[in-house]
Image (cartoon, rainbow, N blue to C red):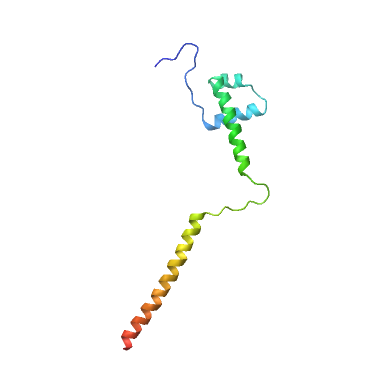
Length: 108
């Protein structure tokens, strides 16, 4: 498959490369065109990277809460702990019944 004249071959950037480019753009150290040329990608790739990074940062900031972090309870873990306690109680009751039943047979 050959590329069209004037088009660059598709190059995929590693996450660390994307982050570095984004930080350079944020700090004003480079332009979209310069970053694209250095990375060997199309300008639209850098423009998309900027949009995705910005949205990712906004999403992450929206999830964070200032001050003390409240631990999110893991519902499945709570359910498993409740089940363990229920089984522990049932096993203890069965052990008592077995002990009483065996005791009666020995003396009876």
